[in-house]
Length: 323
Image 1 (cartoon, rainbow, N blue to C red):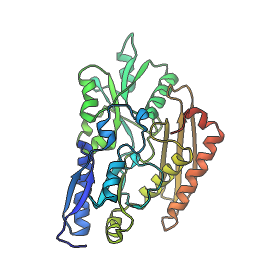
Image 2: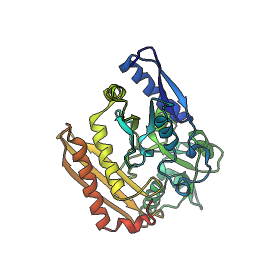
Image 3: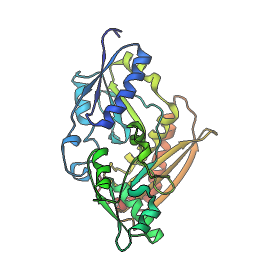
Image 4: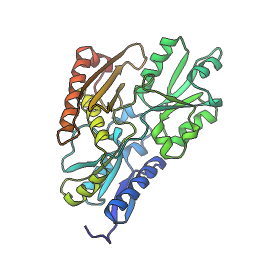
């Protein structure tokens, strides 16, 4: 690689994507000794105003970046890993998965309230909580049913400013966003409650980034590999294997979280439910994990095994039409 020629990093134009890509650009410049320039690319998911479930969900934020990679207009791309389709793309390589940020979802509510306080404050009416995620809707509605709380989940789209703006304007009482995104934007102080996985399991891959390049860019792939974090990669491989085996996309109410223990074990939790929260199917499993060249195979096997159990338990019927 010519140290004088900048590497072209493809990124979506949103404030969050630019913040994430800027962080990665600095790290790539550090490990390669080459300057990195951001190339802004508009995806279909950025321009469409339809809800993700209507436009296909998985892949709508990714395909334009992948086209740019394959056409040679950029050298590598940064994605939010939860946006990546589970199918392996021909001609492309997942070169690195950096260490994961906070996996939790976050409540941003009026008056600094947490979920329980918000429900109590909304006397005589349901607390209106906005989210664009069927997964979050399913778990919020299940929490409400279990706690005798009155809430209304409202489907929303838009960037972080738009979504939090619904709270500031009084149109909504709260919104749920990813903690990782708020942290990367320097807006973590706006969180009024972190929703721990016991209350709301995150999306597969949530909080993780993906660095993707062409499969034939061997030298670049090796350089980007210096940013790979083996425990994070193993965890997201397990989560995405579960998602793939369920044949579900980001428009389905599916949650998964894998954690690597200090005892060289991988624990994987999965949730499949109905959006109204009437039914949530929750299962978990644990398997051995050695962080070597077999780690991805071990992690994928665990994901497939838990998906099989969820399907045996009726997960397909809960997801409705498969993505």
